[in-house]
Image (cartoon, rainbow, N blue to C red; front, side):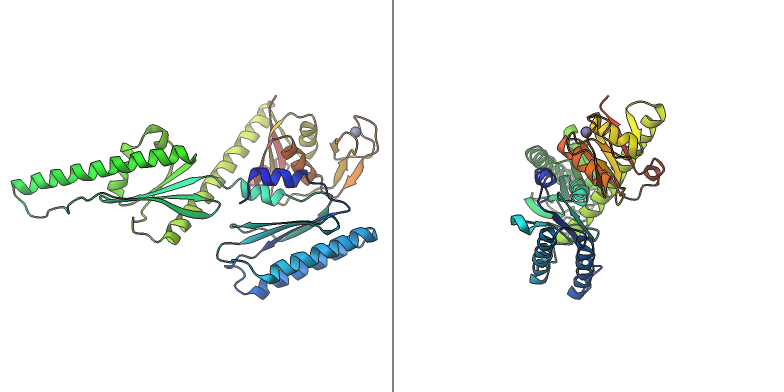
Length: 372
Ligand SMILES: [Zn+2]
């Protein structure tokens, strides 16, 4: 599981002499054969060796140890039906080694730094909300929970309802009414069970599936607290295989994440435009961050920029070398954007890593919604 606590503790970890962070895309849909992603890993290993070239001998040895450990994990095999991305954080000089198995794909990347490079992990973690999928028809209801790409079936209800009669006549109409009442009772029952599950498991979003008219009737019966969480209505039948349900939930999750990102960037653009509670561009964002005014940091996935960091007061800047706050001599950092993400996480700010959003690119690929 990729939990917020785990990311925060990784982001706060300082390794000496150096931490190797490696992300490897092992998605079976893009890399059907093992050799396909093993080649990618070889390429990343070469990149890391090149970058380690400038380091002191102890650091080079530590990186070699990291690369060896990462390679043997990858060659040792893992469950590819569930794992589409791997993230490694290693500092062999200190015996530090962590692997995160992701059910969503990652972008190949290898970074050597004093701390684990957590930005991709953060980006993955924020796509994880808790979903419930409820499939209904006039007799059955099945409830699934969906989280971090995994589906688990929680409850199955079966309320016996006689088949609808097809013959005409007065008694047939009575039987029909009786049958409809039973079906209505069944849906009401399913609604109550859903209410309990949503409350007990802190479900963020609900996906409903079944025949259109049954889903409409069911939705009308839901408690307002549950109803406002309905994110999608799909035509998946109650008998669907779990894998079909999982794929549908993945798709809904993806669409919701995109919509949420767009809304966040729109808010940033409006607030920056109005000149209140928003900043955009690297320099103003770094300033807001070190002044502890940031509520949410928005950053384009893959955006990197060199910059400066003050070792004594942690000031981050685009230009060096003298720290404008304490006067100390700042250190040049390869990627000040990653430093910004770590700083934001350390200060319990929300971090949104935004993928493919042209509006954020226009704003300078980084920005922040401010507390004040
Ligand atoms: Zn300083």
